[in-house]
Length: 160
Image (cartoon, rainbow, N blue to C red; front, side, top):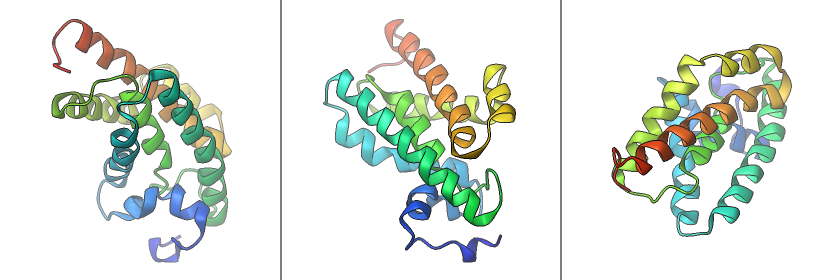
């Protein structure tokens, strides 16, 4: 399906395409990851439990929006579908004091795990289908990135 055939007027596609960021001609996943920034900035001062609830909500919305958008275009995980990156990067940043350094390191960690898909991330990517399949590998990449970022913060390698 050509990108011009997507419709940002359809709520599930608007979300599935990361508010349109997934329509970037180059590196749509990288641009789509930036769609998490409003959620991160809005909730960065909230308690961790509230951030976890937002992360779960972003994931649940993503299962629906990504699955329905993929069905519309008849492509399991079209590159323009980037809500999974939005949710994954948000997960990475849960409970991290936000500074330019934590955002940059979190972004790099998430993109690494999302692109490289080591071990269990690759397995989830290949085994699951539909909206859950699109979301699951990025959720796990976000969890791996969160663990690494928190470890770097705790050891002082990244200033929070």
